[in-house]
Length: 331
Image (cartoon, rainbow, N blue to C red):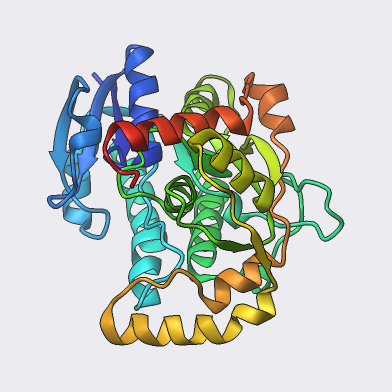
């Protein structure tokens, strides 16, 4: 009898939050884990662990045996990679492999975790939604491009193969259990540790990671096949976010607001060092280009149709800082 819920990416930040929400709802959990993954985020979960990799299709059929519901949360989330093809393989080919294997296994419903990175942006400051136009040539950065292509592949399979998938588009999750941490988590950690002297102004949407996880479960319970739902939170300027982080952490906020053009030479040098020595750059030409756009989004559709209820950005930041502090990550 197919009654298992499979979660990919459950050792990660968003995936572990999704697994916790599903456990609370009584799902019989199976977690797909890579051989090298840090399992500390799932140590307390009552779940079956299966070892596999999205890049190895032979490992997917056993993982999907007896699965009724699939939550595909796994993704390579980095703002810079030395070899873009590795990210494309993980996020696009890996998603395609899993979707096809899920259809072969008779999975009844799929929640695919995409990203607002796959959506369009507005130039007038009004928050974008699921209908905002977007094309591949408007997408900046390899991560965003990989998520855009992966989402388009899922939508194609829905149209052409009746893939029973619902798409959720988280914005920028912040909160506890960010073990890597994610690029955004690193930014919060740096600021909370007093290591953020300057910044480049932009706008983004901050969501509590546990709200995003709840949104995944709501999408399963109330979402419609082939639809997209933005799981966001509060739209906030980056400078205001850093002042919020600094106030909660009890440190001085960054005092210097830089122009993108001032950092372009720094980005060139950072990328050169990264390619030569494998050190992940803190600033790249792509991140500077992205900062010119206000990444504001509306979760109104998810609120209206799913019952999604995001909390303020301050709650997400406070919980993130508390977790970093509790786990000895703040200097």
